[in-house]
Amino acid sequence: MQLPLHKTLDASNSRWDSSSLTQGFTIASVPAETLQPVPMLDFSRQYSILRDEVLAAIEQVCASQQFILGPAVESFEEKAALACQTPHAIGCASGTDALWLALAAANIGPGDAVITTPFSFFASVSSILRCGAQPLLADIDPATFNLSASSVEQVIRSHRGSKVKAILPVHLYGQCADWDAFGDLQQHHGLLLVEDAAQAFGAAWRGKPAGSLGDLASFSFYPTKNLSAFGDAGLLTTASPELNEHARVLRAHGMRRRYYHDEVGWNSRLDSLQAAILEVKLRYLPRWNEQRRHLAHRYDQLFTQAGLIAANTSEGIVLPFTDPRATHVFHQYVIRAPRRDSLRQHLSERQIGSEIYYPLPLHLQTSLSNLGYRQGDFPISEQAADEVLALPIYPELRDDEQQTVVEAIRAFYR
Image 1 (cartoon, rainbow, N blue to C red):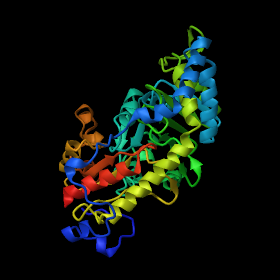
Image 2 (cartoon, one colour):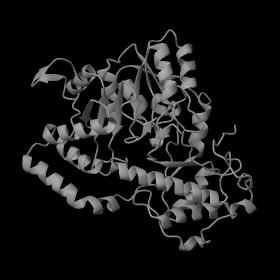
Image 3 (tube, rainbow, N blue to C red):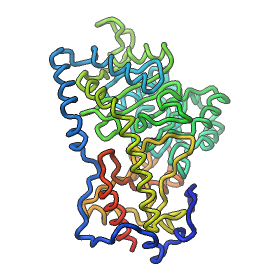
Image 4 (tube, helix red, strand yellow):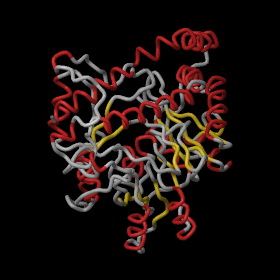
């Protein structure tokens, strides 16, 4: 199956042959053995910039001797809520816990079904199972890799006997799912919308930030994220006072009063040290996300100049597509590549970082075989898993390093 690029292609770059590989390429050809290493991610570059501010924030927490929840967490929650333009933000121990808290706060449990995507990190489905609910999967949009609303509609219609209570779209790679379409589904079917915004802090749909689109949203601050902690940390956002209160109770063993447990919750409190670090970084995040967009645009230009791009992977590389209604924060810059695994090996041999998000769709994971899905059930997700390749993108990435990445890829297909 050929997939649309959804970009305007120059006719001279639409063929996959040797003449198009060098057409218009502005980077001087460099022997492969002289290419410099390019790390997939380099934490030290950001830390060298923020070191004094981060250490000062850590010292303040250490001096306070309040290490779990407390003023530092409350301060970060307030700033995060403002950034997401939502009344409530609840810090928790991880992005996975944030997903579980969102579902549990909405009383999703045994007998309920939640529709999500098979092309995501494992937590998108495991959080549903942790609540005792049934995950139902629907295929993705081939251009954005996000959950397809039309596929979700088909699942809803085919499971009328099931108690579908919520839809869990993932804002994959830092681009919001089609919230116009999901809003229509919510209106027609009366379902909860829960954003898996783990990769999308600072992203927006029609100018409205991720975290304020659904009934609830969850974020991850794993160290690789755009807004990253020095370990695990997460956040739940909602506009509902009732959901806010319930989530806060659940993250602390179901306690409203100390040692009085009104229900069975979990220990998912945010550490004060992580909150303090995140508040420092939050001040820089708009600038960092803008730098990521600049880097993504530069990649687009370099690949175009190299004559590498095409409408499908039988002819060349397919570049990322940004929906014009979305503000993309490029947590990842993901291409579709022919002979993807061989290309990745080629890059690895030259110490150029890359990653596959994700090599095996969730419906084919061994631990989820009891969901009853098989190979071929979600062909667009399965094709994506065979073709996607994430390239280095972080605010401190240098122009010459991007040139090295594209030159190495050009050399592979030469």
